[in-house]
Length: 161
Image (cartoon, rainbow, N blue to C red; front, side, top):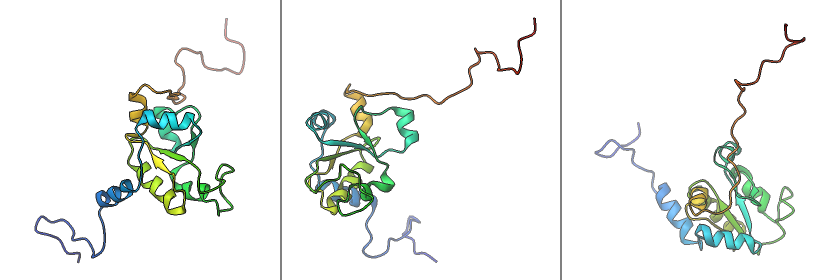
């Protein structure tokens, strides 16, 4: 049976770290960019990489010119040693600015890219939400397709007279 503390919470195993500690350690390694600085970096040639799932990009919108690479394949697409890398993953000097919805997952992802050797990888403070609030360019959102109640149903033959 797992051990619990006096409040009933599980006692963590020795050597484990909580997500807050992991996130703080990741961010300590990054020169994080506010949305305005990220926009300027992107305009100057940095790759702005949107790691959000497709459904989230459709629901909230995207940044024009950003590259969609979902989080679950990010390291494979940017490791210059990997045969599954993107054509843009040409070396370790590549400037990659990672964007998620609110700026949490992107910090962990940028730290993972640094672990691969991409020493200029970083992320956007506040993520896409902060980008949008700052009034920077966005596309969308793309509303889901829903049947229109205004159009008549499609029939096999001409409408009755």
